[in-house]
Length: 127
Image (cartoon, rainbow, N blue to C red; front, top):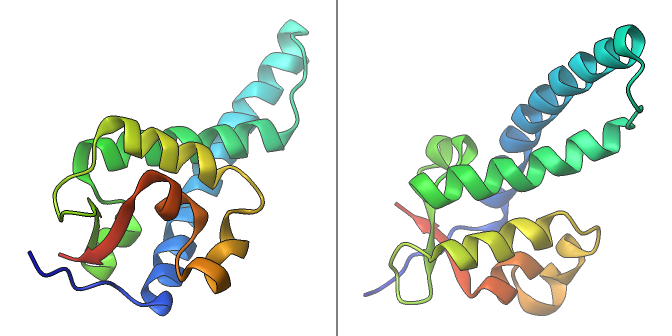
């Protein structure tokens, strides 16, 4: 199977769209949490816990079900394994965990792809 890989610009567009959605979800969850902190005196968690937790669950759930996120739907791309088929759930979990790390994007100049693609042995291709 011949895979047509997407370019860096498409990946940046995917990232921006998905990050906006993730931020909105995390912000809503954080505001709900602040309400509970104020009225029920539960322990306070800062916004970072909600943001990074949302990143993990958003990508893990959406990519494991659809192999696409809303950003990938817009750019008509999808996640596949190296043979061109839907990646395993384990590969999606690895992708989602590595995305939470700060160093993920810094591997693009060395590997020609982000670290989460390299470690999970996945690719983003045109659908």
